[in-house]
Image (cartoon, rainbow, N blue to C red):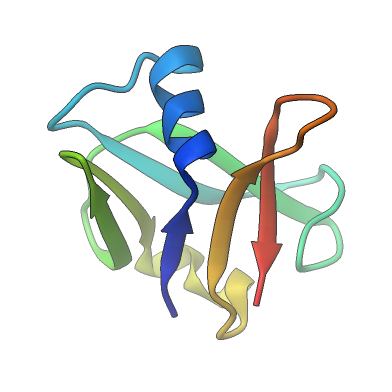
Length: 95
């Protein structure tokens, strides 16, 4: 499994969440929401420090990661984070 952050999503994190170099962004499983890979669950995102990162990627000094406890949600799919052109919000694809 791997995480891919598009250039547009990278800019979104800096502009919308004020993510700066040497910070970490966590993708976590939350109950509820729509459009998720697993019925009844969706992804959340927060600035956090890794404790037991199962997968991570660094881009321009920012670490994006998923904790080991949330790995079940992805069912061996890669996570691609991009921006929806219409709404300019984060979009998740699973491959």
